[in-house]
Amino acid sequence: MTRKIKKVWKSKPTIEGAGVHLKRAFGYYQVPQLDPFLLLDDFHSDKPSHYLAGFPWHPHRGIETITYVRQGKVEHGDSMGNNGIISPGDVQWMTAGSGIIHQEMPKGGKDKLLWGFQLWANLPGNSKMMDPRYREVKAVQIPEKKLASGATVRIICGAVDGIAGPVKDIITDPEYLDVSVLAGTTFIHPVSSGHTVFAYIVEGSAYFDEERNPFAHEVIGNNYFDFKRDCKFGSESIVLYERDGDHVAITADAAPVRFLLVSGRPIGEPVAWYGPIVMTTQEELQIAFQEFEKGTFIKHRV
Image (cartoon, rainbow, N blue to C red; front, top):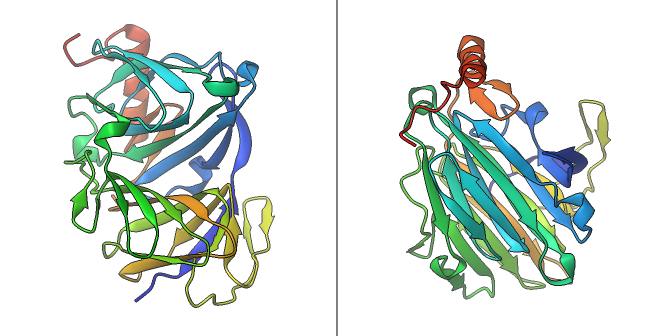
């Protein structure tokens, strides 16, 4: 059965770090409907003043941060001694676990353009204090599969037609695909039963429900969303699917479409979240910040 659309909304401008202008596709107010995912930011600018201040040294605990760069680069350093540069097509998959302190400093590329995405994924309570780890995946390590339908998929995590992405052994069993669909063609992809599935539209527009069933408007927070009745949505929109169904079907209209397709197994636990730290209880959250203030936050060997 094809998955149906549950909700759709547009990303919203915000400023994070030391003054980075970005679009927030989802965040605090959408939890827990995107469980195990917490946040998705789209940073896209050709104005250095909007990104050069970056994200200076800050802590994380209890989550994973996944950074995917399309244009420009991001320089990274952390308390485990890792240093590197994430260039176009590269991915940084960082498991904060028990605690890590790091910085991310964006740099523009050609024409001063910076474009990338950062996704936060939650960790279950029994894994929040696991040892942190850092994975830097270069563009050449990410397989790209061209399907018979004409769609092209970069496989960061998960599998397409038996080809697996380089990021494996993640607790919430996620899938992270960068999908391009030609005009007038359909991309059909199987998804795991009960997993959360969403698409973030990067460029173009497409139909995200093959039956194009009409559905009514919704009110989310203080924002009013009046959905088109043909289920066609465009760039900077999040399409969240219902949890019933074993595949998704996306059809490009008169022009190509590119989107991120992400899925993962829900954790189903309480979320205690403040800033860069996400725990299960308020007590755990308080302890984390107390340890940070006392200098005992880092549990791993430096």
